[in-house]
Amino acid sequence: MFWRRDKPLRVELLTPIHVTASSVPAHHEKLDDPAAKEAKTNTDLAFKLITFGALASQAALVIYGYSLLSGRFQQFGIDQNELSLSTPTLLLHGYTSLFSGALDAAEQWPIVGPSLLAFAFVAIAALFVAVITRRPKANVVIGLAAWIGIAMFMAFFAPGAGVQQGRGAGLADFKRYTQLETAGDLEAVDTVVTDKGERLVGHLILADSKSTFLLVGRTLFKLDGTTGRVIRETELKQRPPEMEKLPPKA
Image (cartoon, rainbow, N blue to C red; front, side):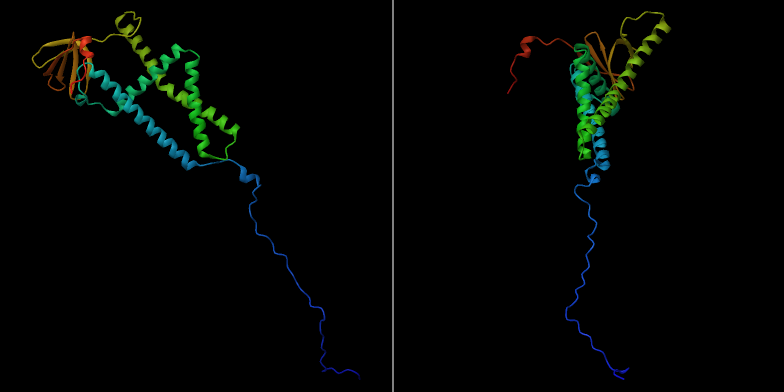
C-alpha cells in the first residue's frame, strides 16, 4: 500500500497563529460615581467638637461668674483671697448674669434682640455642620443648622425659664404663709448672733464655708463662719470725686 502505519507525518504552519486575550480591567471607583459625591459625616470629629464646646462654654461661664463676683465684692472691701466659692456657684452666677443680659436686650429691642440671639445660634450650628460634613450641600447645611440652632436656643433658655418659674413659686409661697401681697422681689434682712451674744441685723453680702459678710448700715462685718466671732469691721464711704482724679503714685 502507498502508506504505512508507522510512517511519520510532518505538518508545518506557514503563517504563525497569535493568540491574544483581552485583559479584564480591575474594578476601580469612577470619579463620576454618584456615591463618591454623597455627603459624609465625620462622627469622631463631631463628638470631639461637642465635647470641646461644652467644656469651653462651661469654662467661660465660670471665668465670667468669678470676674462678676470679684468686681461686686470688691466694692464692699472684700478681697479676692477671702472668697471661697465653688465651681457650681460660679457657673450659676455666670449663666444667670448672661441670661439677664439677654432678657434686657430682648426688652430694649423686642424683635431685633431675640432675632440676633437666635441667628447667632444658627450661625454656630451651620459652622459646626460644615466642619464635620464632607462635601456638604447648601440645603442640607441650612436645614440642619436651623434645627440644631433652635435646639441650642431652647436649651440656653430652659434653665432661665426654670429660674423664673421658681421665683414665681417662691413669691406664691410667701403670700400663702404671710397673707401679704408682693408687687415685686422680696428684700431679705438677716440677723446674725456673734460669739458675744450681740445681734447684728443687716443684709447678707456673702456667706461661704469660712466666713460670713453682713452689711449693717454702712459697716461691713466679717464673721467667722463657725464661731461667729467678729474678725473685721469695714466702714464703707463714698470716695470723693477729687480722689478718683488723682494720678497713681509712682
